[in-house]
Length: 605
Image (cartoon, rainbow, N blue to C red; front, side, top):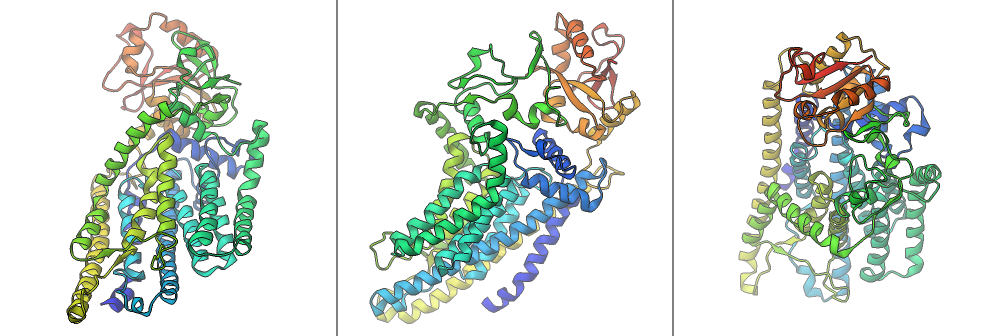
């Protein structure tokens, strides 16, 4: 059975990859403002525009992948999303490799420490029951969880870096566990490089890199009882490799901001979500919206009119929607104040999100509970002075908890913490042992029961892996059936295509500037502007109400529109939702529907 499953594993990998490739073709359109910012950065990388790449909110590794996919496929504006979906598929394959490396490293450290335990305690321990899941079963389980994540929070249709960050973090933790198992310095170097790549993907990894280096030193010193002279070279090598990869970007960002800076996304999100600071279009006079943060805006968005709020983004030379291209530029000098009183409500919310995440990913938890009910015995001894403790699970589990904890301080989303879930759950499965016989008379029956339990566990793990892949196949086929007639893949949005075509019919040419109104047309879904090749440099800010109601009730509507016109915008674009307008409505005379969509444009210049 074990041999058969080991031989079947490459076929399962091919099956999982083939089914997931269907997502790259049929996964639906899911582009938002974050995605447009990453695509804009990819354009700057392809143009070697280094000054525009240094960004305090979005980091360059994922845009580099997008730029590479764009160049290889020779993409056009109409086909670039197809290239980016294929890039995400390539990242999924990298994630498969990372999961296998991680599970193999768990198994290797488990074996190494088990041998060390057996050599340091009585001979009776040498006959202790084996672990329930071997290396191959851990591989199946890890890939099953990765496939499930691709169905939910790490969809290939999302142009976001979370899957790439997860791959680099898993590779870093795998290298860390390999180093603990072998003591080889090359694995410490690999860990540093992987953490550097993770930092270039998201600034979160800067803090996590030091957590990993600390874990390396503490585990070797306390649990493995190594002397500092053996530990310090590994610490220095891992830190040096991390600094070599991450250092140039830190230096460039610090030079741009005239202070040490490794990224401001964490501080800004803390100010927004914990400190109560206004997230969008904060102005220096809005002291009531500063929250608990110290705010001395260095270059806020240019305010053209206060009521309604009309803003200009012409100061920034980059980005389809410059306000979200680098929000740290507009919000520079917002300094949050950390407060336990403010953190408690956020921690409560994130605890609820933690529980919700578990309920949204019940498969592996139910399998773990079932194996324990069937007789598997979790061995989680961890005390350093316990000679029988095989604490191989401790490092990855605590690293997973630290990932969850770092995000919980600021903001938790499912796509952020999948890597933490894998880092916690897979070591727990690896720690399951077969049951112990209670006496010599029960030795033979216990061995038979253990063999049956191992067979059952292997069958259940493979069944979970196959069911996860089967569910992906079902989703892919359903997406294929729902594909609009005449469209080559799920990446195409009929709405965005029609909006861009409608702007072209109004005489709007690529390279021109436009204005927007309402969250749908501005922040949430500005891909229409990218598809049309235009930049949004002026905005009439409508925070919540539908655009139709907002404009219809606006007493100085013509004044606001004249100000937008004076900025040189070719058209003003907004999403009117379910409302329909015509020239018979005096408030909306001149507005033109764009390609039969809910988007309308008012020609200005």
